[in-house]
Amino acid sequence: MSPKGAFPDLTSGRRPVGVVSFAQYDNVRREDDRNEVEMLLPVVGEVFGNIGITKDDVGFICSGSTDYLIGGPFSFVAALDAVGVWPPRAESHVEMDGAWALYEAWVLLQEGEIDAALVYSFGRSSMGDLSQVMAVQLDPYYLAPLWPDPTALAALQAQAMIDKGLASEADFAAVASRSRRSALGNPKAQVAYDRSAESLLEEDYEVAPLRRHALPPLTDGCAAVVLAAGDKAYEWCERPAFITGIDHRIETHSVGARDLTESPSTRVAGEKAGVAKKGVDVAELHAPFAHQELILSAALGLGDGVSVNPSGGALAANPMMSAGLIRIGEAAQRIWSGQADRAVAHATSGPCLQQNLVAVLEGV
Amino acid sequence: MSEREPVTMMDAATRLEYVFTAGVAMSKNLHGYEQGKFIGQRCPKCKKVYVPSRGSCPTDGVATAEIVELPNTGTMTTYCIVNVPFAGQSIEIPYICGQILLDGANLSFMGLIQEIPTDEIRMGMRVEAVWEPPEKWGPTLASVKYFRPNGEPDADYETYKEYL
Image 1 (tube, rainbow over the protein chains, first blue to last red):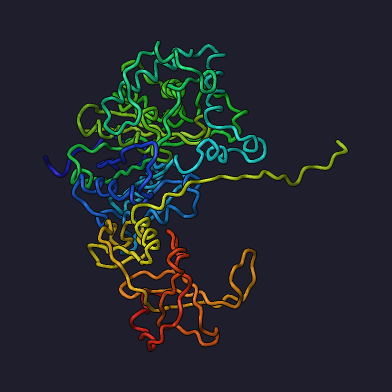
Image 2 (cartoon, rainbow over the protein chains, first blue to last red):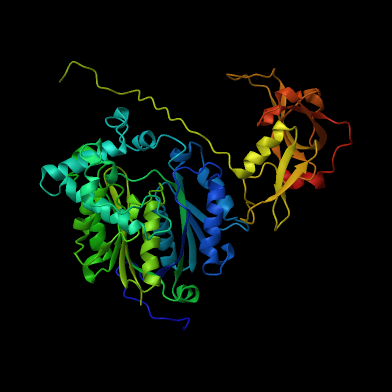
């Protein structure tokens, strides 16, 4: 393989930046022994080891996490111990899913001063009461004092879809059934099973109209990605997953002011990222609740021929702050292996799909 | 216009509870206090000893797997004298809060200094740990009652200048 390969046409940016390595933790319900640094250590080691590089080969490090999950301040600073930042190097952090950390790294790589970046994220749902922790992100005057948990808000969204005639409970069950069946082939999946949609509909409601199968698992985990630009991408990866388009958009903070049955922010991000320019083979969508996959697929205009969430998606494992970055990693893996030539990866943040990032990955 | 005054302030009390996971390395350190021992870990690459270790060498980013037991003696690299009363204060002011660099360690931690008048305190002072009686040992640095001067001559500045 020549170290210098061809580069795809870019919708976003001018410099081809490829996802060249990916690693994730064994997603678990509760990591009892290791702290965040000890969880990240093997993942960072693997993401470098996969392509035979060290921390000295990346010019920038960007992480995504939130102190609200851990209950301690500046956990992102402590987490840097897992990389070892000596001699000092450029480093940044976003209080968001790692997919947005990847976006920041991509922007820096566009400037051309560095050729490679490490992106990682971590989050543990087990340390606090996730339903309460998630309520703290809501508008502090009208919504947060009511402590609505994410499942209740998602149920409002699902019910709005039913009321509008856009989907039924059976459609939600079909998404969950397919995702968990796909997850059987994902060694990092936390929840995987082979059950028909009909049998899933026999489950009790968690919050009507959502039954257990429509909910994501609670997950402790972390993930890491290496990005490389230009020739460096081919130096480290036979078939880099080039980010040909990437964009993120946000909707209003107020859940009550949105039409929850659609995702205009995903639609615009998808348009800006050039999703519809060519056919899509695979889409990894960050849809923590089953019905949200339907909203996202519609917003991105994904046709029947697209393989959606072959990893099982966030229904298979939902490590907070990493489930979006993992979608990018999962999509990239399918480019590397040749299973896909063009993949869409999506990440979400905020209640009921408030903010959305869409990336298009292409192999040459 | 309503006769009501506009709302300019509201209370929205927030309380979140967490179960903290100390981690594998930190747990070894904490269990050490149950046995009256300072337990640190050594970086396989730069050979620095961290007490406590968080499981990784912050310089090299590799696991600090080797367990190192450290002695009771060390150097107080720097200090401050606490003169200000605050809520929940359990020690009579003024008292001395010092950074303790145990002999053989490459990371200092904060400790209470007693058995010395505050006007005699100085950087580089050699100190030793005074442990609580064994029945009060637990997985906490509070198993160490305090540190006190051990009578040795002060350490040379060059030996601890990296640890201020």
